[in-house]
Length: 202
Image 1 (tube, rainbow, N blue to C red):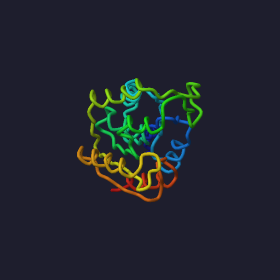
Image 2 (cartoon, rainbow, N blue to C red):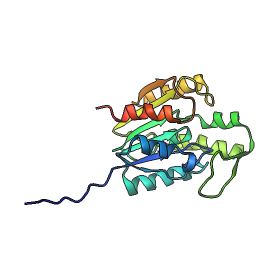
Image 3 (cartoon, one colour):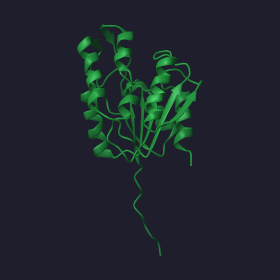
Image 4 (cartoon, one colour):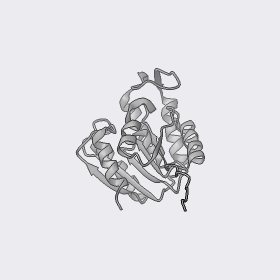
């Protein structure tokens, strides 16, 4: 006698892009190739932290991702997403966005990738910076079932001193830390290989 079972749907994973990027950066596709056991989602966030967290929480409620990977500002936001049943991996999380934005400089900046909303540039000004300051004061990290900070030893955007401070914040909040010299700030293919190692640890 034959038995039939409905095919199981793959669990969802969510990638959160960085501040000046978009879901079209290619990182989601790289993660999907490297970790095909997940169905990968990549919501588009904005340069507004409150709005972005709202978008991410809506996706988390809808899809219940088992894995969340975020890069730079996306890594920072990953730690605030209300997904306590997910494994969270923050890649070079930009926890001091106010410092990073001032380092980038006031005024107009182009987005690094084509965006779904059609925007081609954004403006850094003091009100934007203060919204990030307020965001940190009003929100607390929400731990997942596993929480990992993946840091580059040669982060050309944040710099090593800021990376060390960010790592200390994550460690103080119960995260495991991994340092690598195989990639810089961006989540390239070498960073994806490190993520795969973390995910597939028994």
